[in-house]
Amino acid sequence: MKKTNNILLNRFIDCIKFQFANDRKLKYKVAMIIIILIGAIGIHMKSSNADTIRLDKTEKVKEKEHSQTSDEFYIDISGAVNSPGVYKVKKKTRVFELIEKAGGLKTDANLDAFNQAEFVKDGQKIVIPSNEGGDINREIDDKTNNDGGMININLADKSRLMSLPGVGDAIAQRIIDYRKDHRFSKVEDLKQVKGIGDATFEKLKNMITV
Image (cartoon, rainbow, N blue to C red; front, side):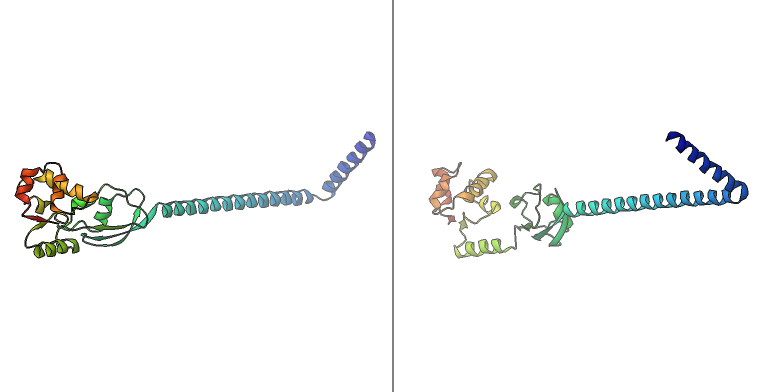
């Protein structure tokens, strides 16, 4: 069987040699076909690589855009800022950075009423309060006028409280801190604040109200 296969192979080779001997152009034709096949294969591989690179670039662009979108959100800021509105910010943006985007603080902004170092959150509404001219302060002024000029210890700001005899910066702050959790129901409750004893209260009781 092996001998038969060798005979057939030799006959096939002899046939090819005979064809090349009788047709000198045949070898050029075969060479041309081989070159064309090699060129076609090369073009196909190059096109496949280009499609792969283009796809990779497209995916990377999409991933980058998605990453940028997920790292940004919107915050609404109003109150005592020069340009209130809705602003697009990045994650880990702090309140003071948002204020800068909103044109900075107005001169009457109450800096003690909020934390400028706090991180903002998506969809958050931030209102910067004022020391003067706001609705709360108008309420305080109206209440003070209705009380005959007496200072309401539930509503007065630090500067008003410090105008009372014997009340300095530290005690005024203690009064503000105390009323965050305990509303003064009567003027005598003021003695619950550290630093205000009977002697100090006697000086204040005719100048304050609740």
